Amino acid sequence: MHERGIKVGEPVFQTKNLDVTYSSSRGKTKALEDFTTTLEKGEFLSILGPSGCGKSTLLKVAAGLLPPSSGVAELDGRPITGPRRDVGIVFQQATLLPWQNVIDNILLPIRTLGMDLDKGRARARELLELMGLEKFEKHYPHELSGGMQQRVGIARGLVHDPSLLLMDEPFAALDAMTREHMMVELQRIWMDTRKSVIFITHSIPEAVFLSSRVLVLSPRPARIMRDVNIELPLPRTEETMGLPAFAELCAELRAMFSPRAK
Image 1 (cartoon, one colour):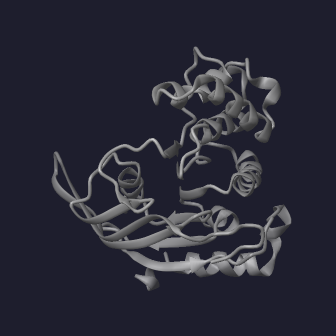
Image 2 (image 1 turned 180 degrees about the vertical axis):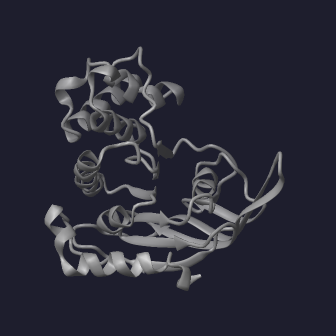
């Protein structure tokens, strides 16, 4: 698929007939079943599905935190067998260390992975400028708004130059106005960095606004019900959300969750 301003190509992340079953106090639970998909380089893929369907399980597999029960998950053509340094993660909460300032929070993956600190600091400052936070590198998390904290979290996910960025409902805790602003900001960051992204969300408008493609998942065990290309031109703005084509795509996806669609 090709979006204006974004070139996509070879696969970055792939699953083939992926099944995941895990054990809990309630016994065995099948979270993913026969899950086959591909994320191409430079693509922004959103995952929509009902609560508890297995969306976060897919992210854990991609991050190397949960092994497949059967089937294959690959990153850059190699099976994922454990945590990988070429994956970045952005969580629902920014999870910044309160005793460290902004730049030191961003540098956490550089230190954890034993990478060159001087190069990492230079990259962190580039990202701060990209995020519009260059004046805040010495500030502490409590001095930042929620949206600013999430931008720091995104910078931390990108600082070690991962092949794949995983985002688990990163705007869910933000108010509506901040969330809308962050959608525009994230799209700008994605277009500037050309990263491959898997984005978990419960928000249909958020998925349509941000994505190259949207996967709609069934209730658990998650299977792919629909794979929808989002062909709205880039860059998208607040005005995009008022377009008939935007409303039609949202309605098409929303219909997948109606009782009649099940």
